Length: 313
Image (tube, rainbow, N blue to C red; front, top):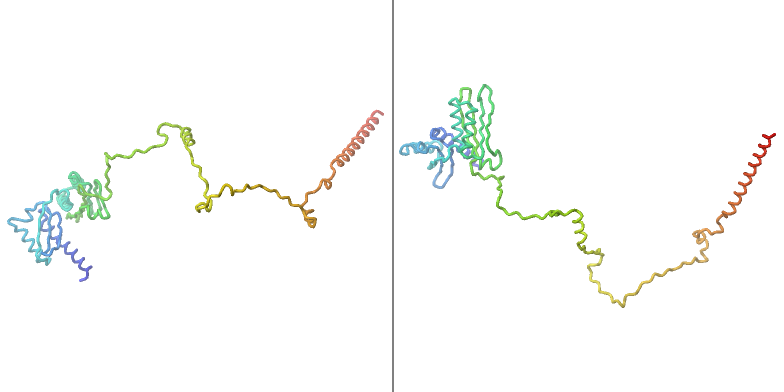
């Protein structure tokens, strides 16, 4: 048989054994099981609220259950160990069966749900959730949820930390499914954190904590000696031998005068600046303008005199 088929067969057998224990040990407060295969046979650990009822008088009931497992499920030498549940209100399977029985006896679903989840939280649970699905009040089915505290719905904590149990309430209108999820007290969750009250935190020095003003802070900065840094030039990292002071020659700036060559008269003429002779004589122009202005003024005065003589006549 392939490995995939073997896993399916093991899961199906486990579910059938769990249903068998629910039917046979329901009155004893069946709280779940753990199955482990050993070289000596199959070891089954049963959790029950009343271990005495599971074992029976003189072990009669436990022998009956063992024989039934060998015949119905073809198990080799099953060994059953019965353990008592310390706190039934923290066992999801037991709580789900209790709630289903309360609904079958006629309890109103809201009262039954709130009472059950309050008992779970009073027992010290970190969180709990109850889901009722089915025809709780009328002809139409619906889902009712009751939440308290903190609960995980997915991821590894939901599989390993959260205790989940199911129950079924058979009513006149139909069946009601009951699902209970409980996070037990003391469970370690990946998002837990602790605050250390006695931890010594290092003191942080803040600038200006002593009441100094901005000007004082700037003055302190100015007073500090800032080392002068020279820019790195290429080749600074190389080792350069120190020069002798005697070998150092004072550099002098020598001005060279370039005289135009007589053979380059044409080029010199293009680049030479215009001489004073080529510039127009401004004084002569000013004298011509003044003479013209005087002639115009004289003509205007003569015209005014002629006009005055005509008016007098």
